[in-house]
Image (cartoon, rainbow, N blue to C red; front, top):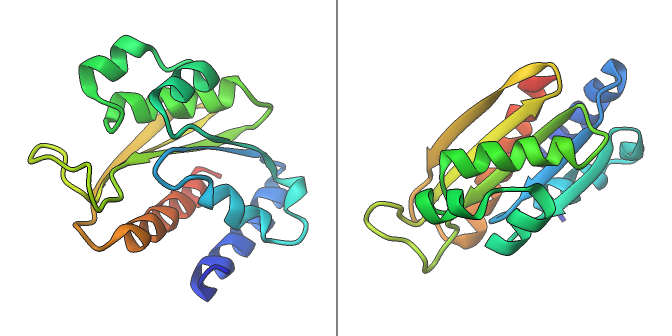
Length: 162
């Protein structure tokens, strides 16, 4: 289902997280649960994956993760502040030690000159560390390619957060 390189990265991440006793939560918008799906494709991932939140709508971000509606109104759902709140909310609403969030514009529509197709914001939060944010502009690669690139970044950021 997933490309071989992503499966290999997921296996390594699950093994490393298990060895360190780290449980993971995901908060996904434009990837629609692909990160959680990839991690749970690994046998034995139940020792690591605590839960995943698919918060595609703004309302879901507010209700499930506690993202303030005025923050979304002020900065837009695809923004650094929202990505940070999503990661914090995933930690707060779970029993995980490490969370990743993804919010972006996969396309083909929805982009603007300020926020073009391919713009994705990521954040990781760890219970004992500060939140880390990254912004990527993948370009208009096509919906599937943007989403898969976002999964790659999320896996890397999770691995770096262990």
